[in-house]
Image (tube, rainbow, N blue to C red; front, top):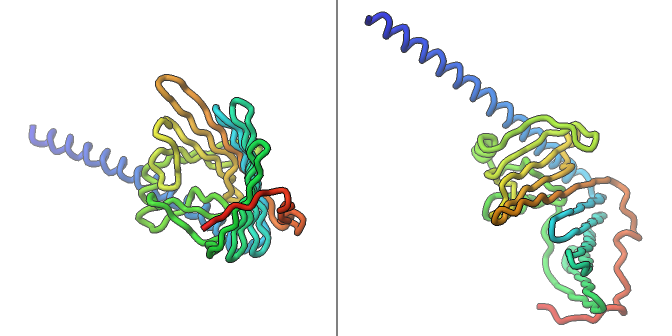
Length: 245
């Protein structure tokens, strides 16, 4: 009887060790993947001063297109939004090293606000309270420390997927420190191209009082294509200048 108990405990220990090994291998794999993706985005940020970014949002209650033109020390962002009722708004923001101009168009109203301030250094990691990173290129694999990366690996499912003809990693999580979402979000997945580390698409599923919706965001990146014409300011005479602090 005693021998049978020993054999049983031995089998249990072996099963536990095998499961532990599988767990460690899986976490290690995800840590390596996230590290490589982070390195690729960081490399793009540090070695490119000419970047074009297009982000298209196809949400249930509105649609929006955001174009960003970065050339040397000038960062121009153009946001066009159409609500479900058809109302359109447009915002153009041009950021210089010590000045930021914001042009807004809502209906027939055109306003210009000018801010004197020190702009953040492009490419540097700016973090919010969750530790998420904001750079010109969305970096969904960024981590402030190895401990944070391990935690993100624990709570992020990573599988391979083909999206829009591109071989990608599909990152799914509601606890990853780089994922921002609403309280009604039930599922969030980001598709990141394997070769470049650049995000391709984000799909967010939302359930509001039993009403299920799906928000889709697509990303497009180009390098060394932005011209002086792209970062040109609008005609200020067409806008009403507002006082800004």
